Image (cartoon, rainbow over all chains, first blue to last red; front, side):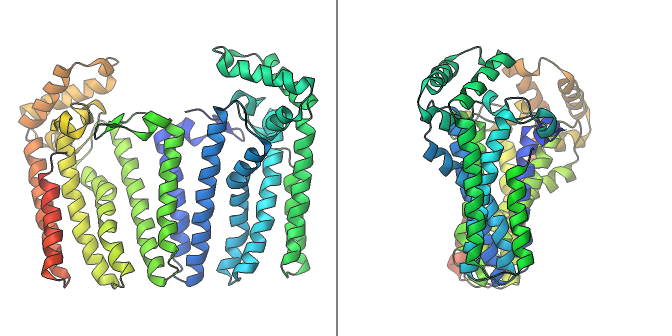
Length: 248
Length: 248
């Protein structure tokens, strides 16, 4: 198993209890989420649970793509955005909509709330990709250059590779060599710092920051599709703002 | 990760695609099962899905117990039966009942079918525990002494340890020493054969075979609780018979 051994300064479940029991904890929470919703026994509960299971399937699809990207030399920006839409967009879309469905919202309202959540998820993921490379370990609780250590083809990396120019080409050569290197696991801080600097120089960092702001704007716009009290809109807007400025 | 690398003569998913993607395949099938049921959008679909999620939670509970037993020196027969009821009983109970629920069966009928499935699952698991030690590798596609290699506290083992007598005591001493041994992973065929012979001598093999027959009988008896066409009863009886005589 690979993956971070700590999240937010605490040992992960798999680190403490082993991978097998950690997998089971995840499965149990997944089963419980559906079970708790279905306990209501209403038609709305069935509709909400179906949205949850559809979102779960997309999440799984996105996660599988994410892992497969780690073994591929090149991933397009479009592929990366699609993966992040599945992995994170679907999660936030579902989180925003199913409460409304349980409260009796029709499908159009629920779909509109899902659109807000989907774009909010893409903004969140863009920020996450920035933190995965340039985040402060004291704030994130992850290692420095965490995503680079895991060979993640996250947005800053694929955007930098797609940008063209000297830094982009040098980055491409380095990552190609890394993919075949037996010494990758013993790379020094400096070697990761060099790669991060090239990603930034090629424009991957700025492109991703812009993408976060763009998705944030689209999410806020989507709220126009639903009638809601001003106070609720203000809360959803504040939530979207929080996602884009978070440091961890 | 531990676990068999082959099942029924084919490489397992985790062996071919790696543990991470294998976990995701399992999660995807779990999500899809609920999604397909809920697609119907009926009250019955919600009831069936709820039974499926409850069964899933029990399965997970049983699997977690099973893993925890591998690290414990002693497990009672009662604990083992409870674990197998969760792990396998709940699975077959659900498999037998949810089709009936979707077809409009009331809760009493569904519960009765679940009782049949639950005891059938316990019979299946008892046979599985026998095959896990004494199964023919050519038939099962698993290694010889598969469950002993994984330190599984399966029914034959716990029954033998609970039986008392010279063979039972000698077995207990050996397994206690094994738990602390650094050489366990390089044990020869003969060392596992010695343990299997002691389990048999202490009566663990025969007790488990009797348990399979007992659960088979209780399962068949449970069918009396539901009105059903003779042909359906004959098929459910044949299925129960198959479970107890299978060689793989």
